[in-house]
Image 1: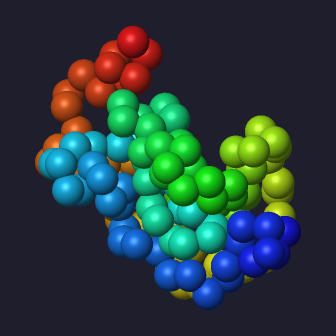
Image 2: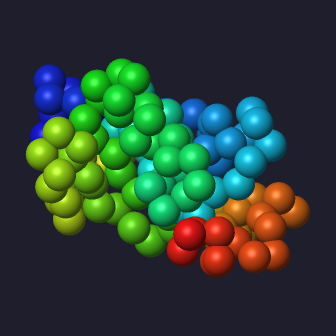
Image 3: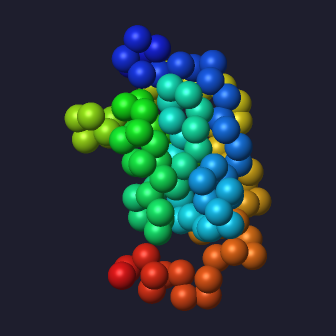
Length: 117
């Protein structure tokens, strides 16, 4: 995995939450960070699935978990999980005090039911 195949270790994350959910006032379950441009989007368990949407729009194949304590990568092109890879620019996760699901104050009380639907 390298910049030539979709990873730029110097690309900073776009923020501490899903860029599109933040703009729309939405919420997410977990976050993923594009390893090529740094876009932070919500995972496929989230209602809006913005990380996958970013891949479909840009073709950027790799995301890394943006959850504290997780460093795995996912390749959308091959549907493969990688337990290791290059270290990306800091920060490597959303703030540890930011809840999942998040952000605080925007998650509906019945969020677990919504995700199972």
